[in-house]
Image (cartoon, rainbow, N blue to C red):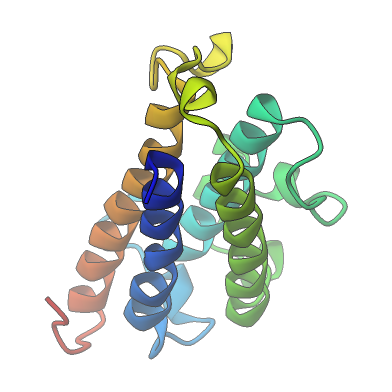
Length: 163
């Protein structure tokens, strides 16, 4: 297995963890803030989709699926404060879009040669991840961090502890 395949497998493995963590969430549960001013899971899901789409397209333009019209704007930082359910897509739509996005990420990472993995990441992302390989790994870490935040929302909602 080459490094790109290993990173792609790691990225693909995030999907079951995310889906399992949110399996028993309703659309209303996605708007639960674990503490005041924390971002709710609905906004976080959209943020992950927008961030990953932008990162993928910066590395390999056109590699990511086009987002629905107005999607990125719905998940800007200033929209994170909204608790209006009408401002956010339904859970099923968010998870479907994330899966579509992640599958595209896995596909472009699988195509990266070891030299491409070692290449500098796009300037805009270099402070977060200095190489394309580290950027790809950081996308998995980004999802893991949000899954941890979703665990806190689970506890606030009285849902079973998963891990």
